[in-house]
Amino acid sequence: MDFSILGLWSQMGFIARTVVITLLLMSMFAIGIALERFLTFKKGKEQSIGFLAALQPMMAPGGDLSTALGLKDHFPDSPLARVAAVGLSEFGLGISQLGDKADDAIEVELVLHSVGRSMERAKKREMASLNKGLPVLATISSSAPFVGLFGTVFGIITAFQHMADPAGGGGGGLATVSAGIAEALLTTAVGLGVAIGAVWFYNYFTTRLDDLGGLIDDASGELTDRLVHKTRAGLASEISGFSAMSASAMAPAVAAPPAAAPPIAMAAPPVASAPPVSGPPIASTPPVSAPPISAAPPVSAPPLPVASRPPQPAYQASNPPPAPAFRPSNPPAGAPPLPGASTSVPPLPAAPPSAPPGRSIPKPGDQ
Image (cartoon, rainbow, N blue to C red; front, side, top):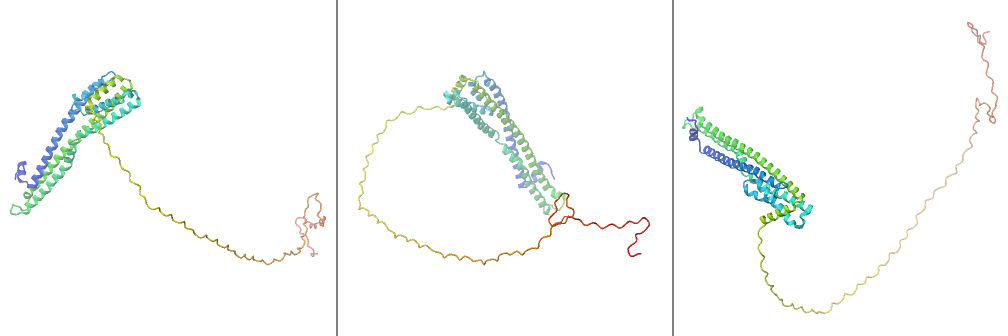
């Protein structure tokens, strides 16, 4: 069995060959887009740098601003030149439309804002043009492995078919399924190779696109700042000359107005007024009189009976016994005696004599 590329191609089925041809076409398309984008980005960056070098002396304080519009023709492949030309043209047309108000700082500031917006729109158009073809590379890089996997599945199916066909030499050995497995692995390898190359190209050109976009942003911002400095420096003669040149270059030719035609007299016949319509007088409706409303008689309610309460017997207090007079046992010195109280204090009984130590006191009745 031949395992070379031609040998494997001769042993492939119809589906596997279709998958390999599709993957080869996808790879050729990706390579073509990569070559075209490479040349475009290379020319664009080189000419943009050259345009910046030529624009710098013109935007200096003593430079000639009126010749800046002609630089775009010398750098046709520069996206920065196209963006800057849009901004310069917008600035010239705005200054020319101001007329006597060109010395007004507020009006000039509005013109500069318009210049910034116009360059932003031009930058978006250029970035969209530079991004052309990159979505195709992203699609190829994401779908090529699945296309190869599709061929792998059919290669495995072919291997099992050879194994199950005794007439074709299938007997279950390794030699029977080796052709189908090789076919499956070949389609997988081709799909992975196409996807890897497309991913590399896509990432490379995305980085180049970001770099060129940053260059355009920086240059357009610096151009706006230089225009602000020129307007604030009071270079009225230079700006007026630049605005006149840009207006003549950008404004379309206006054709002469046609000769005025004589007015056409259109006399309309008078409209006859309609005769008044006479009819019988309308009878007035007699007024409707309503009977007076009689007032309702007042309603008298009987008086409410007052509840009688039986008299309560008078409270008769009993004669309480007289309270005993308070007799302090030890009145204070100098206090007057209370009425009815005796001032004499009965003598205390004499204490019994104490016995000498060692003897007891005799009790009455012991004798």
